[in-house]
Length: 260
Picture 1 (cartoon, rainbow, N blue to C red):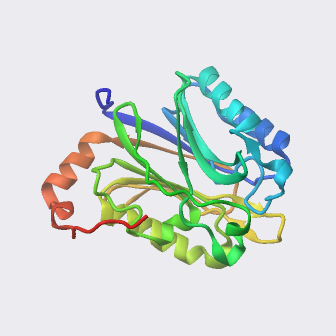
Picture 2 (picture 1 turned 30 degrees about the vertical axis):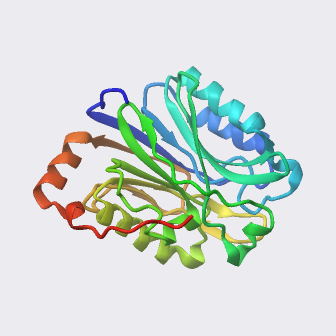
Picture 3 (picture 1 turned 180 degrees about the vertical axis):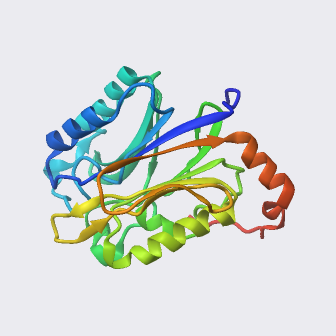
């Protein structure tokens, strides 16, 4: 792992995803993501299609044009970009969360917990492995939407610095989103970026954002409700170390294994 960069500048894009229109969503992000603003841009879950758009023709073979966009834009803007894509791999499809940086390196995580209430498991295969990404020396734990409800899965037993959660989380359950994001930041003593969409999806579900960036103590550095916007924050590596050294909460955590 490379030496950790002291400060990590993050931009999170809260957007109204156009249902099933990959070209329109990519065009919007092409205009939104710019050079020099951030080391990392975070996009919502299924940012190119919307979560409810599960038609087979929208899935991207091995990442397809959506991954190509992430690679191109990352290189053009000299930044890292992450967001989830419905990916076709052989006979299976995954809700795959990609992180692409300007060198062309690709890291990914396949969503583990499939949203049974919405029938996600009828279309998508669940992932089996937790992932620990690396960016500029920072350790990053990725999770996708419904994963947020399962604290054991995002448990900080790897001393990660940043937890990323991308989602299409509806307004009808937004109180849970707000509470769980803050809890995950506090219990894991890590920065947290939670990025949700706004607007109405293909099934008529209303989304009101509530994207947020939290400190390891659960203080909001930036927050936005029902508007298209970019959240911004500078994350500080020394701040993490100082908080963990002062309070020592992670040293008191229980020890147990995650069944896969």
